[in-house]
Image (cartoon, rainbow, N blue to C red; front, top):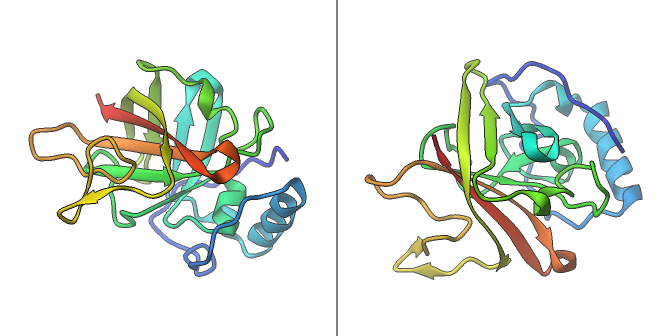
Length: 184
């Protein structure tokens, strides 16, 4: 359950980690099955960065897409797949295994004012201060073609600070726990 990815962050991708598929809720056996497949296909060798949340002792690899293999090892970009650290909204999806210390299971423990750090392939650290934590429906409201402010997919306006959004499942997958931070 406690597999760690330690490969250096890279801008390169693995064909398998970029595949699209329906993401499912993981049982413990699913996690182990997908993790084995991910390791067998070298997904662990191509993290595009690392997500660190010091207050809950999380340090997980970030992959350019969220799928069952990438989410078995860490977190994956969602919605804005071309997002860049420190710009716009970097949306990261992960799994809540409801086991302390496993993937994003402890995300519910974060508090406003705490830090989220994205470690990039450019060897830079992007520090964000948590400004919001809330349970939201899995579906995002769209008005005039844009996600509403405060939603997981909201894109900051020119006069607003870039944000990071980290989310996982809440209420057994019916809702999402959405944590957002502003770039410091």
